[in-house]
Image (cartoon, rainbow, N blue to C red; front, side, top):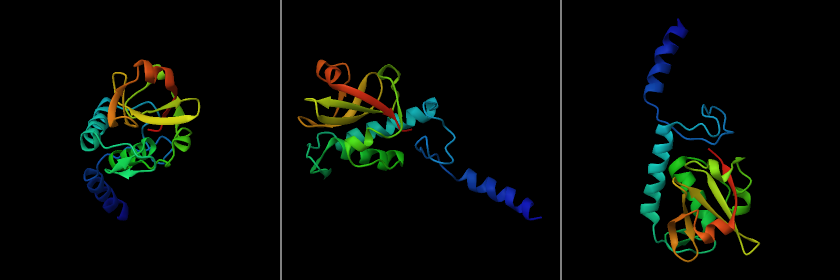
Amino acid sequence: MSRLLLIPLLLLISACSHEVLRPANTAGNSMAVGQQTLETRQALLDRLYQQHQEWRGTPYRLGGQSRQGIDCSGFVQLTYHTHVGVSLPRTTAQQANMGQPVQQAELTTGDLVFFMIDGNTRHVGIYLEQNRFLHASKSSGVIISPLDSPYWRAAYWRSRRVL
């Protein structure tokens, strides 16, 4: 009898749920790394563009985590927490070890892209689509930049997939 009551209860609960994106190593994740559905990818892309609209032009500030100023890893951490529901570490060095490596030619929406500037300064952004990424730039604040610009192409270091 209790099983008969449990089934309708589970159906009711699942009908009221909403999709939550989780990192690939989270228990209960039904989507393997790199197997985002088109709907999921589009929803994530929409959220990332929304984040850009909300934060566009916010100046870069090392260690900053507000609209008064934010740095690249803080922006990535905040974006993932707010729009994806995934907790990432605070620093670029820590973020660079999250998830799975991914080749630049196989980037998909939400992948983290890392750069090495001047041989030791690390920078991180979030891949959007069509060779563009969202990040907090030292010179322009929160912006979208092309990966294939001479500057970013030369500084590219690695990419990681955390979704």
